Length: 447
Image (cartoon, rainbow, N blue to C red):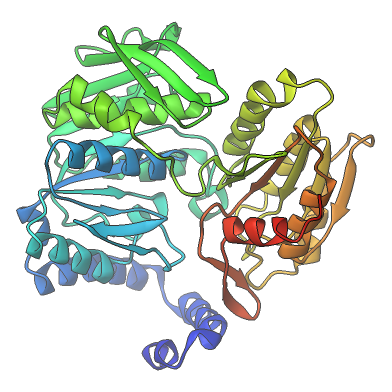
């Protein structure tokens, strides 16, 4: 029945999801566990164990996975390797790229094994891919021969799905428990020791100087970025006397770049080669992407956790707002529906009320939930009554209103979707890209 619904078109996705949820409730947990164990094994058998022909680098963590995957791919390609990539944004095999329209960061077991087989058949040397907690929970990582496991950071996310932060962390750790050659871990994260505790031949830790979290981590290779700097045009830091400059903004992107540097080093790429690759980075689509630069700035970012949202707002405040007297920040935000991580909604409101001068609440991915209720839950914690708050469910109209409110030297920041190509609604998915909508609505303005 599900296969039939899948084949008759996009308009029936909501019905398909509802039926899957219905059958899932009726199915005993041991049957579901067997199901999730069976499919990855069937996948590797059907596609003839493709990971044996590849070096696979898996990147996990709450934030930064997509940026790290894209930067690491560029480093390896610049070093002369043929690389395949699987991220929340796109898939890539050699020179061929296509958008990720699955509405999931990590493909399902069969799709993932098929992708790896395609990469192997194309004679790729590497696959760089995101590894998510939901994917691990469903054993999508099983029976894949990983060369390198990368940990970016851990903050609260998918708490309701996993049943608590500790269980969320333990799920991430199942990936590190797989046999692999290299572990790369963020030493500045509070959970570094935990992810370094798994037995592996080579351990690489990275962090920023100065930072007192880098002590007592045992006998590992440390890659510490010195003189980290952020500025309106990008970031810079130095490693072992080598200078790195990237045209992407935000302190969090120093961590992402440093993570990618460690991936390159783990594969034998020289520091000078890594620096050459990173300085030519054009930015990551939908990740602190400046879509409009004059007469005001318009940024689009994927930020979908309280931690990432605050970092984005702080980056704009530090690098743009505080440097131009009288400038303001206009924020467009919403929250995903489908019953997912409802605890985040008031957190988004609290953070927005701390940093934003004007707030426009709008649809993000409501799925089957009531969009108006989602916005009320965000608004409930916007306590600063001096801030203008508008609720506009039509996301296009919300973006248009934000652009109309902006004056020269202001910053508009639109968060939650980044470069995602779809918006999930009660009517099913619709084609969408915040960046395209910004350009289209900006062209309608009269200056």
